[in-house]
Length: 173
Image 1 (cartoon, rainbow, N blue to C red):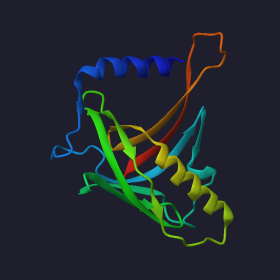
Image 2 (cartoon, rainbow, N blue to C red):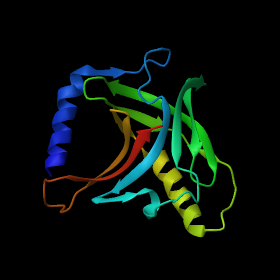
Image 3 (cartoon, rainbow, N blue to C red):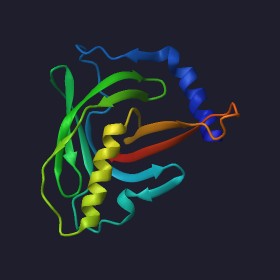
């Protein structure tokens, strides 16, 4: 509960410093670069990507955010262990003070190679599905968090609201 209060306070304090990203702007893109997936938080369970240690059997899961644009959207690409993927994203806003912002990842496309291990393919599908849902980000000290929050009302008669979050944790390559 404390982490939710802390997050709300940070967001309220930083609202005055939030800048809408101008699509024609050439300002610094905080997401730019290649990021390696390290952990996934789903609700209150933190695990390594896909619940298994890769041990070099498949490629690391990555995402590269580019500042190159096509039709006013930034390009992105990466690999999802077995296949490569590509697509685009839009920066909606960014707050320099709290190093966070909002983004929209547009539908992704991927190559269609198969793996002899079906668990890697299932893992890859979850990764790509999660990426397309991400709507917020925090970039700090060469670490990236991509966040998707879903509002949960535990009891319809209660005024309390909780959030279920999926957070992808990356380190800068």
